[in-house]
Length: 192
Image (tube, rainbow, N blue to C red; front, side, top):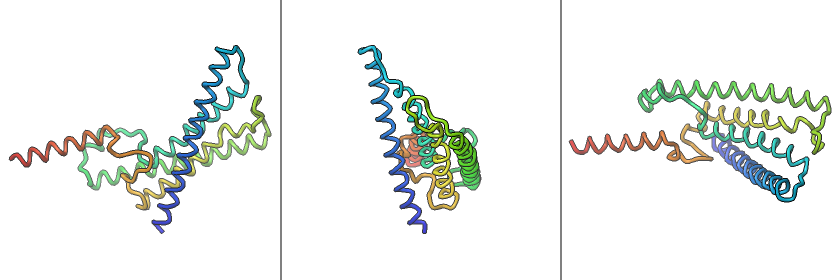
């Protein structure tokens, strides 16, 4: 079962990454087009204001879900880094962090879905693109569901904290510093 869940996670992350890349490229192209059209040709398109707003929301919330997957979320490591590596206290804090993310993701699913359903029932449209108004917020419950899935995988042990998809552990400056300090200690131990 764990292997199936890892494969689902791999495909889910691949799709998220593809959507985020398409959103970013579209955002850059549309904003560049808007700037050139406005300042070079003294014209512009009204839809070019709404679409980037939707794309930024999509990209931002997908990035949150990606950050949860690779444990790149904001944390204060003052206490955590003073605890022994592999110790029980660190494991408790890791579980606590994953439970908090699980609760936040449930909140995002519930509140985001209610808001989208409320907007869908009202039937409003964005003024220029004529898209339904809930399109601006649909990325909230979607990213909440992805975060919930990843939290469950971490809490059940299917994924480990250093199982990364979107990043390399050694890209983290704190991990680089820890590796350098560990190497220095090993050199000191070997020199004695």
